[in-house]
Length: 177
Image 1 (cartoon, one colour):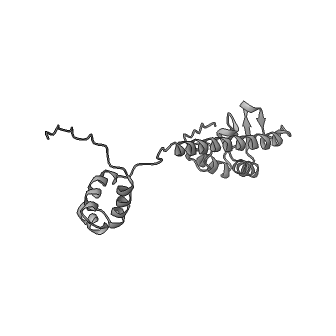
Image 2 (cartoon, rainbow, N blue to C red; image 1 turned 60 degrees about the vertical axis):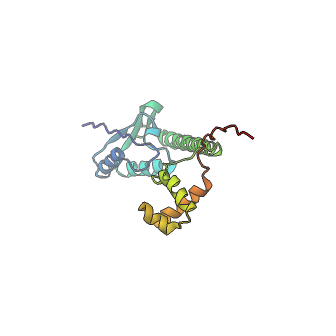
Image 3 (tube, helix red, strand yellow; image 1 turned 90 degrees about the horizontal axis):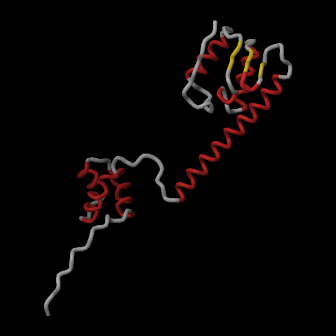
């Protein structure tokens, strides 16, 4: 009996719902052959793929990868060499992707893009700025706004370093001398 198992998570993750379900069946000896279109759909880490191949061998499960001509059944002695080479290439590809992502994030940070979710308390900065100008401390500001003093302290630091929003100057009226 054949069963199709799919995952929506990245192949770079070692634990995925479908993969975990597959490995449970392999460990129980219920899987004769695992067929995957390409190795990078199964694993992108050489160590993870090597661990899976070890478990496949232990439980007498063959790996077939028609998209890459891989067949680790007993009928193909060169398959193990192919699998190890392709796993190394898949890991290299994954590392290149991670490197590109890190470079993109660093470039965005260098351009001044703020990463992550904005603080839900940033909307309080104008009120904090006004309270600081009135001479209030973090504890008093925290009480006034219903937030912890530590959060008030963080907002004080932001209020001091965040420039005031620009407002147009009032028009000048001519004076008579």
